[in-house]
Length: 67
Image (tube, rainbow, N blue to C red; front, side, top):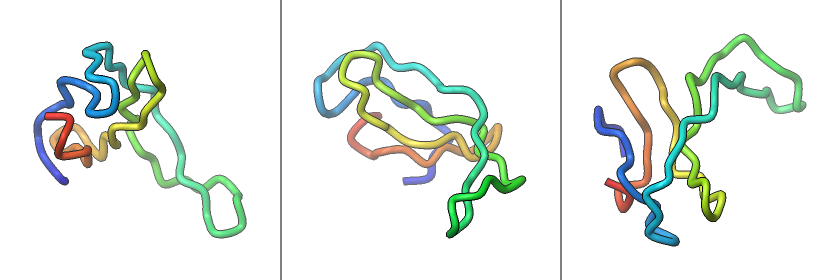
């Protein structure tokens, strides 16, 4: 789900320890790095669940159950 909100909790373990992993680069179909940047990934520090991606400074693509 695309939203301007940040995730507030992990829907898997209900933890509120969420952090944003720094900037990542997308990989192409052959596993090679590209210059397409994802500003980060939202992760749960308790269970390691991936909650979504920070697409740009205004938009997040996150799990709707984590808001």
